[in-house]
Structures are given as C-alpha cells and as structure tokens.
Image (tube, rainbow, N blue to C red; front, side, top):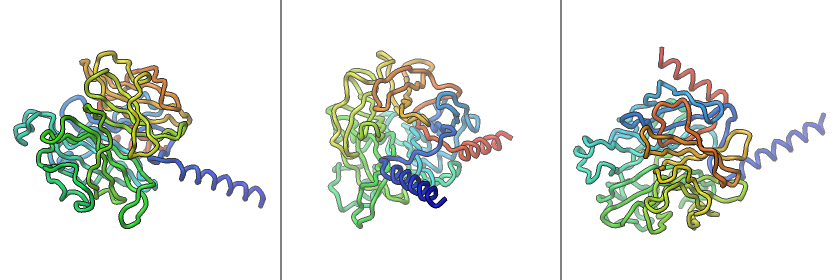
Length: 361
C-alpha cells in the first residue's frame, strides 16, 4: 500500500508540474464550452451560449445581455468583442471588452470623426461567470489612467486624439516581473490608432496586475507597415511557440498566423501559404481559437461579415495550428459575432444553465 501511495503522489506531482509549466491561460474542464460573444442581431451587447461538443450551441438568457452595458462599459454604453478566460490560479474569471457604440446617435453625441471610432476598453472580473465587476480605461485621458505614468516613454504626444482602441484580449504571462519584483501579469493586447500621429491601426500591449484593475502604459507589439486588428494569441505546446492569428486590413483577404518565442516578440511575418482563406474575397475578422477537450487539435472561430446574413465560422486546425480545414457555421446561436470560447467543467456548465433557466421563469 505504501508503494502504491508513493506512486500516486509521484504521478500527482508530475501532473501538477506539467500544468505549472504550460504557458498561457489556464485551461480547465472537459464537459462543455462557453461561447461569450458580441450580439450580432442588433445593437451590441455581450451574450452567452453553451455547447457540449464545441460546435452545436444554445443561447443562454434567450441571447440577451448578461449584464448592464451602462455599468460595464460606461464611456459609450455598449460592449463589443468579448474575450473571456480564467484567472491564472483558477480562482475566478476575467473578461476584456471594447467600450463602443457604433451608431449614428453615438457618433453625434460623442462628436466622433467616424462612426467606428472608439476610445475605451473595460477589464472585468468575476467569481462565478454571472456577477461581474468592471473598470474602464478611456485612453483619451492619457497617462493618468495608467499605473506607471512616469516610468516609461509614452507612445503618443497627445492622447486626446486617440480615435480607436479595439478588441482587447488577455494572456497570462508568468515570466513578467513588476518593478517591485512581483512575478506574473496579465498581458492585455489590442489594436489602437491615433489618427493625428500614425497612419493606421497597430497592435499594442499593456500589463494588468493580479487585481485586474491597473494597467501599464501601452507598448507597440506589431507594425508590419499596414493596418492590423483583431489579434488572437495562444501558446501552442506542439511547437513550443506563441501563435498569433490576425486580420490584415487590405491586401490578400483571410486570417493569417505569425509566431514568436516570447509574448512581446519579435513576431514573424504572417505565413502566406497556410492561412484561413475559405471565404475567398469575402471579409472576415474576430478570430478566436480553442482546443477541443481530449484533443490536441484546434478550433478556429471567426466572423465572415460580407454576407447577409453574416456567417460565424468554425474550422479545424492541427496541433501546430496549421492545416486549416473543414469550415462550418456555428449552430444554435442567435446573432453570433466576435467573441471567444471557454472550456467548462460539469459544475460550471450546470450552474450557467440553471442561471439561464431561472431568468426565463
């Protein structure tokens, strides 16, 4: 019995060590999937849908908003581009949103140059996937919104002319070190454009602390000489590299990949001979990748928005996040749009379903 106990302890230690060494966001659960997404059937809001297999879903709360946008995204009062993940220690959940109302009414109210201009992102945290707290960052306010206003060189001379901050996403970086020596931070990356100081959208990043309420000054992540938006980054265990999927504005249509050994780069040029090209000349964006439970293959979600109605696609990729194939439409979701996916345990899945059922009574 003693020998068996020692073997069990050794096996447990190995599993814990492997989990600790895996880079990126914590992945947990093999019972189902949560699709957390921007509603695409009307004015923007954030909605949930559940699935057992990752392809066939059903809406929660009838596809309506899961929280008050006025509270969570107070600058413009609409939430877009939802990205959801677990806290790195498994103690809760995080979300990042674009704070943006892409309506003519909002353009006039906020005196925007263009309807699609936006200024803020929101960082959210939750203990149960149902009740959320938020802090918003209006980039027009400049260095005062960041936790390190005096410790880094500002990327802009004038922050008041920032006209786009889009699609923030989150990746845990265990190697990041804060000035006080604290280890680990949330790498928050997004596209940003200051029309007065740069020619096009570029990809920037900041770090958020454990509280997910403080954000460092932006630093430039990618500039390939043309506009890039909607970045999705994942650690690919098969080749021990970070893989980035992205929409290039202009040029050959499709969703392209690049790789890097470190989150902060340098990043390779996009791969031109193996990319998501199923839509031909139709436009697509909002890429989000996840691995199926019990498999090393990837599912790649994205929105093809040229058609009416739009098509939210799911395609497959191999363990190297290459060899894209078998595109299909997501099933069972009213108004699927730019969003992200979270693997769920049975307890989490049942809890969300019970919450949704309670709202419909």
